[in-house]
Amino acid sequence: MSAERNNLIMLITQAQNDGARQENACEIVGISSKTLQRWQQTDNTQDKRPLRQQSPANSLSELERQRVISTANLPEYADLPPSKIVPLLADKGMYIASESTFYRVLHAANQLSHRERSQPSRVRAKPRALAADGPNQVYSWDITYLPTQVKGIYVYLYLVLDIYSRKIVGWQVHHQELSVLAADIMVDICLREGVTHGQVTLHSDNGGPMKGATMLATLQELGVVPSFSRPSVSNDNPYSESLFKTLKYRHDYPDCKFEDLHAARQWVGGFVTWYNHQHLHSGIKFVTPQQRHLGLDKEILRKRHAVYQQAKIKHPNRFSKETRNWQHQTQVYLNPEKGKSEATEKKVA
Image (cartoon, rainbow, N blue to C red):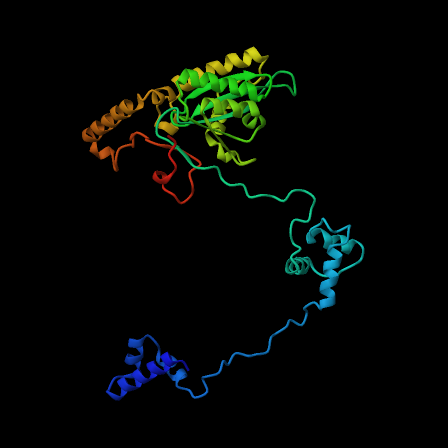
């Protein structure tokens, strides 16, 4: 027994001799009466756990383990995982061990790395969270196909969106997807919007035009910071994806496809005018993107709030709760991290 255990037994015994109950004395020192009785047993100095090591009756022998490893390393199986090795052996009328046993033995032998010739899958880090509290801080852009009347022939719509105001700040339709064409659009946007060096972050997916040398060089020259989605993860660029859905489900989107490049440009031009100047966007409290881009939405939402407050005063019985929330949305987030409040997300200057 340890000295600490002996000391506790002595203190409890002394308390009992002075008239205290054993249960109360044990409670004070933080043990139970059962524990005290076990400590006081004369043969309690030995570890009573069984010393014999149990070995499963169906465990592999060392020879069988070596056979599993040598089989997995044969030339015809060397680049295959156990999930494919075991069925192939069964096709040859052979059963050496189960799939799980193959995995377990290879893992113990440190041979369970990526066995195929292809590159192992990599965990892609989520793009850093971005936030904007005003226009011309974070842009999102992408390219979508617009079908023509010739089957298999498409024209390509380049579309750049300000995530704060939802305004389409730049667009163009071309016959090809090229980095140089995207670069020209960004130059035009920065000139028209008066973007300064380091002011804007441009988010996109991992397509060729987005990561092309000309595009990246132009962004560096303009002082625009690039940001990219994870490969094949459309949710990392939600604003552009949502905008394309709005575009292609527009009631006047041509069912019979676009006649040519000019027709596509003409239709997209009309859509952009409607979207920026007439469309009451649900994501920004039903004001137009142009109104929010110019900062006019604050006064519009203030007046709406006043109208609702007057209506509540006039007919209080019609409002069981607070009136509709017309509070101005101060910040917009792109790919915010889970578990974090919006206030802690990285702000883009």
